[in-house]
Length: 298
Image (tube, rainbow, N blue to C red; front, top):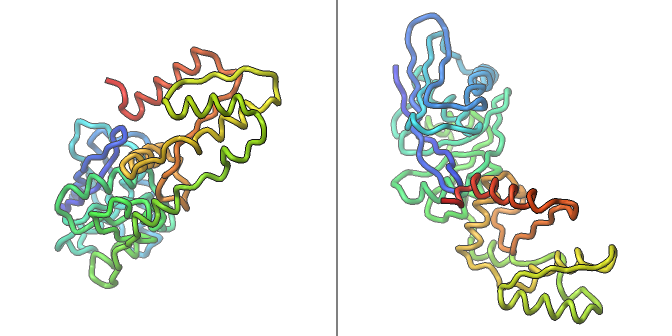
């Protein structure tokens, strides 16, 4: 008994398709996951087991082998919980396999069968939009973020039971839609603004020149003179992000798990404020680690 499900994973800030194969064999009960899974993926067997049972579905008392292909790339994160659970139920005959391979499935399972949001929904949706699929099935909390890709149908679900009912055509779920331009326009506002600063005309002039010319700037002065206040407001006078830049920035926040739940798109210039006691070596080490994490270095 074999079932194939499609899922996806992120590598840097980009995504790639992962084929989840579930094989059931009439031997002593066991659960093995292969395909270079990390600790979070290996632990999914406990979450999947509990979620299936607590959703009132029969858990097969057989030897279960889960293969995540391509097997030469390390799989990370908990987004494979839902496709593994659906794959096991499809291999055991609970879920119809007709057309299930046309969807990309993502989601972290709670022990009670409900779904939790995942990281990297936007870059995955962007990658899925390049291939022919019926759409992506993922937690409802990630629906607005994934819908930013525009060219992919997003089907939000709240639990394993809802996903099973959807694949068995027992319920109908309308694709989640959102106006990208409206979200982009409404998100392009800063809560702290450069025009709030009174006085400090010389340093404001220097910041304006640096922002216009793309120059570096260093501010030196005693504590309380307004250096941090001015630096935090500098992004508000930088050129507006283009839509492409906003999507790229949002992808980084999504993969890093820094995207707020009520903010599907980052349309303002990002600002980072390291502590003033950080050393030069600390700044360089942080920059290198971030670059390596998101694949920015050759």
